[in-house]
Length: 307
Ligand code: GLU
Image 1 (cartoon, rainbow, N blue to C red):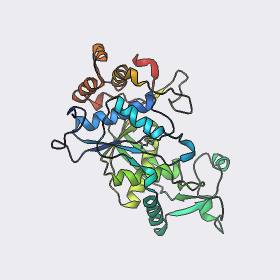
Image 2: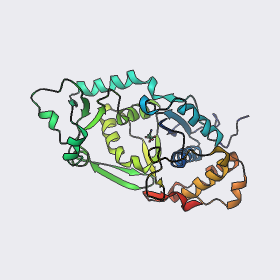
Image 3: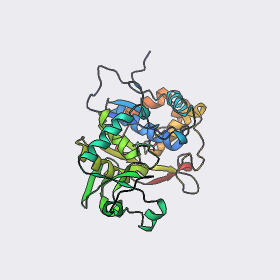
């Protein structure tokens, strides 16, 4: 039987709230990605909204076989039940191609074969040099989208107002990589629109991607979701928990402990005894007591703070 607390009831669903968790299957869930899953889940369920899963499997060389299935199993073990079918980005390549062509037809794209060291020399803000070349590169190039010299700002649900001038801070950015893979920025915008996502709750490491996404939404005529960025978890050396830094996989046998730890980390105030309860009971408490305003307005929180 479906637990109404953790699974949205189709009758009482708030149709205007659609949230999502969008893991890249480059490794199993670690405490940092669990946080993003829990925060987006609680915010959606608190608002009787839908909570979708999108597997961002756009980079096969970085995705060990079986990882997507493992992540889905971990989410289930934590009691994080999603609505509908999981969307795999690998099934959406034709759509991304169509959007790329639209941007090209609108004269907003250009090929670029600049290397990482060259971009570093530009101070990591792409200076548009390939735009003024006499002849475009013929091999080994990616596609960039042009940006404008104007401030893009939005009101983050957690961090408050955030603004960026893409021309000055980022430069024209890549939407098709040199290796022929679609870039995250294009795919995420395509699918947040396709899945009609209204609320994006995710880690603060993506805060400075948001103006790029808003730029693409405006060029493609897509609505802009509401964004909320939670602090990221860092290890004792101050590094983001990630596969690159060997963050361990969450242990689903500790699901109740880790869920209570997640709630504390997110500024919520569960009693210690809640740890003795099942994941479903902990999440039920989390939904009923969710206060997004209590999430710390911080960029990073050390992993061991909420022990
Ligand atoms: N797939 C991205 C990641 O795992 C998250 C994308 C997003 O939430 O916008 O970091």
